Length: 376
Image 1 (tube, rainbow, N blue to C red):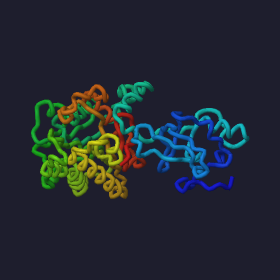
Image 2: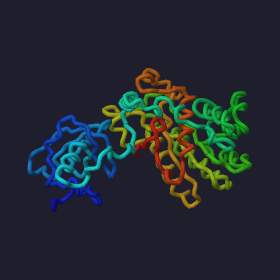
Image 3: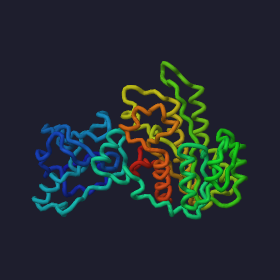
Image 4: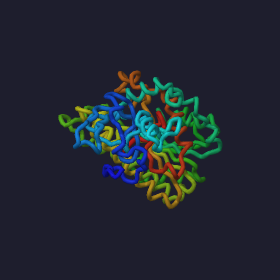
């Protein structure tokens, strides 16, 4: 067909679904399919099929599952994947008549936490529901792992798990404990991620090369943070810890020549996804310091991934998932509905993703619940 493609359909091989040969009447409202956005295919549902000539190039309105209606879009056949459309093209002798599934694997996670958890249960997603079915901690045997922020919660659980896997754990904290001393080979005390001098002290205390650096320090105050209760001081504190902290840490390690051969992990949060705010904070906003500092953290990690590329040091940002820790205690009333797990399980989720890091994944923002990416 000589019909023009939508502008965002550049470089797509759509010969099998040429605009002029597609019968869109095979699609019905509510029907599930996959639709393209920004070069990637997402799960979607048909909202409407137009017969208007003005809509000839993009007659199908789709809703992207898990996203708000503001992302609904009119698309044409070359941006759709549906067995119904493939079947009719095959019958006409076009390409695309191969048997079997041709859907691309999922790339991005769902922003709606409840929908994400429910989908995992519906699909019996073992990787999501029981990380022990895929987790193999033996990859950390003999590895030197620095955990910045290991005194409690997720950081402490990672230290304990790594010890069981015969890894050499170097843990930093402000104040230690007998339990942490038992889990780590080396504990570096009195470390403050808001001080570059403190980060230099940490780097100098590390004598041998590192295999992994996991920045886990975080701060999420139990306050009301809205336009009616502006919390600028607390917001700045969150920025200092969660956005500037990783930069200080990695900068100090680089200056001390402790990064060569290491893989860098920044523990952030889905709260830092700008795109997901329109779903997770729809109609309410709020928690400005939390979301803004996490978004800044993610940008910092992305920039570090570029700066350290020449040294072949990958940098990956991880959302650890919803964990039942003191940091999320304010949300205890939704722990069950949204699939929150104990920090011991959350630790395995994080370490599972750590074990898969390569230069090819450097710069990505990954959800440790399902292993899928989160859009920035």
